[in-house]
Length: 77
Image (cartoon, rainbow, N blue to C red):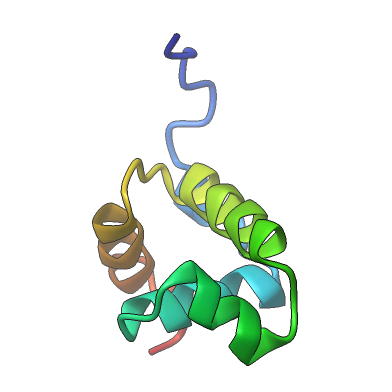
């Protein structure tokens, strides 16, 4: 079930430092498991951070997440 988008400009909601770190590593082509090992966190935690980042940036896929993060300079690359 798709919810009504009450925040059409979600890109203005800032990512947390951990969300940024996870998205940067996704942009480098790393899998969730590799990100978890790299950041010394649980795989479920990586997925939690990426889901939050997707929600904040209005992305539905990893590819959209990377594109929106770069478009909005959300990860500062």
